[in-house]
Amino acid sequence: MIERNILSQKMKEFKIREFISKKFMKTGYSHTTIQKTPLGDKITIYTTRPGLVVGRKGESIKKLTVVLKNKYRLENPQIEIGEVENPFLDAQSIAEKIAYSLERFGSTRFKSIGYKTLQSIMDAGALGAEIIVAGKIPSARARSWRFFNGYLKKCGHVSDTQVIRGESTAHLKSGAVGIAVSIMPKTVNLPDKIIFKNSEAVQPVKVEEEKPAKKSKEKKKQDKDEEKRPKKNKSS
Image 1 (spheres, rainbow, N blue to C red):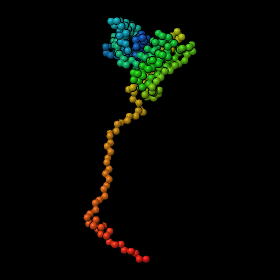
Image 2 (image 1 turned 180 degrees about the vertical axis):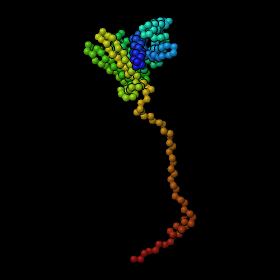
Image 3 (image 1 turned 90 degrees about the vertical axis):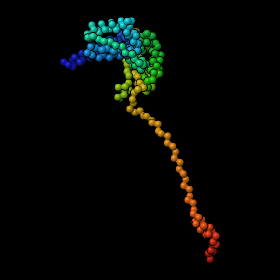
Image 4 (image 1 turned 120 degrees about the vertical axis):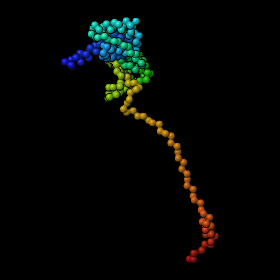
């Protein structure tokens, strides 16, 4: 019974996130967090353009509150807006932006959209990025296009926990087009990273050559006497 309640609660949260993402797709939507509080359900919507989400005099927030109460049966939902600091390092908002651009300009400009977005991600300070666009573009046969740059982990603990991923879908006349964005930010701690420490400047040690010891006066006198003595000739 407890497991069923947990599953139903998670399904409700998933549907709420899906509904909010579809509603605010064109406003730079990033993600939504839902938290239980004693006063009610606290819902925080993260976006790159908070003004469009709030609307004039908070009309969009008021309408969303009514929908959450009636359709999803939330008790006293409290909606807050969180702003994304760097929009070009948020994979979900970038995927939504690409989907909106494809729906607006069509599939003929998908290459320029992909390369410009990739360059903006790298200029924002990412270590690596990858954009995959899959669908019937530009022809009637479905295929996938990959735009990538920099260094990106594809597997392992770093890929699962620190690589930012986002997905979205663009609905065109030719059919649905899937967009997947992966970004590895500059703050990623790689286990194989090597840090070179600056070694202290070692001053060269001067080695002084040993000078020959000075001969004493008596030793010098003995040497002179030996030189003055006549050498004896050896008789054959």
